[in-house]
Each structure stands twice: as structure tokens, then as C-alpha cells.
Amino acid sequence: MAIRNIREIGDEVLTKRCKEVTEITPRIKELIEDMLETMYEANGVGLAAPQVGILKRIVVIDTTGEDPHILINPRIVESSGEQTGQEGCLSVPGKSGQVTRPNYVKAVAMDVNMKSFELEGTELLARAICHELDHLDGHLYVEKVEGELQDVKHDEEDEDEE
Ligand code: NI
Image (cartoon, rainbow, N blue to C red; front, side, top):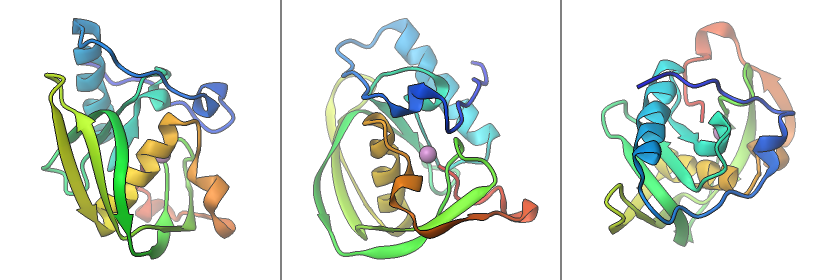
């Protein structure tokens, strides 16, 4: 396993649409392990493959620090409600902004055995699913920010960055 370099806003790789994963190769498994390690090391709650420079439809999410979700080729099949709150991104360091997202989402994805599963989430998990899936289509939360991006104080930086 290895920590990978996190790409930052302005890097073109973050604006591209990612490709579906068709086969779980040893290289994909290694990528997923590295994404988890990189997310935890950066105190993030989610990370998408393009954030480490790989244009594949893979995201990892862990909003509690002990419940990692690996989603391959994920898509949102249901959403409802609304939540407005602060959001950050490991690719936009030191910033946060207010974004409105659904309060509930259900995603369908493949696991590392290419088996389909559902992941339902509310509140932070719903927000993280929406945020990470946006990355797979080349979108950053800054496009959705209501008002201005804010500077995050240093002691808050380890909270909720995706
Ligand atoms: Ni992000």
C-alpha cells in the first residue's frame, strides 16, 4: 500500500469524466487499497479515483473512521429531502463552502468482487456519496457553493474533507 499524491483544483484530471471499471485487476485492487490509505492519512471522509489521477469510476467513503465503503461504478438511484451545510474537499485544501444536497440517497455500486450492492445514507454519508460521485463526472463542490468559499481555520482542517 502507498499514499498517493492528491490532485488539487486547477489540475485537468479533476474535470474529466471517468471510465467504468470492467474488470477487477490486481492493479485496481492496489489502487483501492492506496485510496483508502490516502484518505485516512489526509483525514478525509471520502476520496474518488480522479483525485489520485486515475480516471476510473471508483470511490471510497468512510464518514465514521471505522466503516469503509468501496464503490465501483456507483450511481445514485434514489434521493430525497434536502440538507444545507459546509462541505470541503481534499482537492481544495484549506477551503469550505455551503452546499445543498439531498438528505437521503441510495446508491447502487459494485464491490471488489464485481457484485452489485446498495448503499443508503443520510446526512453526512448522503453528502459524501453525492460529493464523491460528482468527482467521477469531473465536478467539484465549488461549482455548487452558495455564497463565497471560506478559509478553514487550521484546527478544523481535519474535519469532513472529501
Ligand atoms: Ni472532493
